[in-house]
Amino acid sequence: MDRARLLMDAVEVASVEVARTYAARSKGLLGRDGIETGLVLRPGSGVHTFGMRFAIDVVFVRRDGRVLAVVTMPRHRLGLPRPRSAWILETEAGRAREWGIRPGRTLELSEDPA
Image 1 (cartoon, helix red, strand yellow):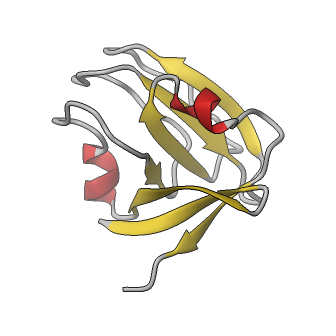
Image 2 (spheres, helix red, strand yellow):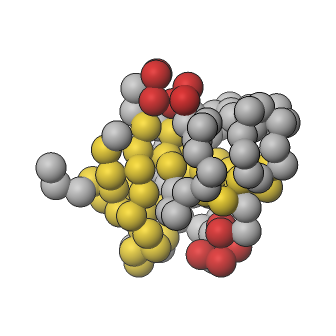
């Protein structure tokens, strides 16, 4: 999986994993006991937490980087898709608040060199 720096309003927040392939996006966080940073599903407009071992924050992001919504999803749920979402950030529940991510903020990914 690729890695990238997650920037919010041009300030680095974290280093995150990026799932770009269908297989990587389909697997997502399944089988993990947690995640120290976050996982970006790109592209992405909807998620589920069936089979997950922990609750997650789901951050829906438009093509221009604007955060549309932040939703905390318990385990074993199906989230409503956000058609205007270009990509999604998943992280452990509560972390989006810790990082200050909320609707209206701007996120971007800065690809780490290989």
